[in-house]
Length: 199
Image (cartoon, helix red, strand yellow):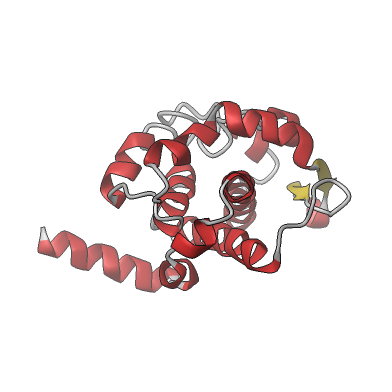
């Protein structure tokens, strides 16, 4: 049985909203004057999945982070692409990206509702507004990318965890090769240029 693409997108709504209330607590730290927000994912807040399922969730998170951090995709595009392709959702990557392409940069570049967090994560991060979330790191490009990369990864992890808890057999259908793939920023840019040259 294959994961339907609707099952990948639905978590941006009701599934994740309900899940986010019971999976963890927000922790805030201020290293070097920047604000970083991360999800405390201790076993105290959620049951630990079997090792192979935990590995799958970790790899989906890391793949989304890599897609965002290397500039291949924006936040919500990275989340949906990593989930869809990594968990064998069956949707073409281009279609997955098009479906969520209006969400990045604060939904339509408005700077407000964060595309990655638009699925009910206000309870976890204190806000879903890009301007609020990035206010203290906006002037520091590296810190800004690092924070958005963490947020993208956390959202991806929560959705992947919800899907794997619901369907443990995703482990058998996952595209492990895709999930383990990592690219550098330069490698990602070269791939983009090659793809543009082909079209």
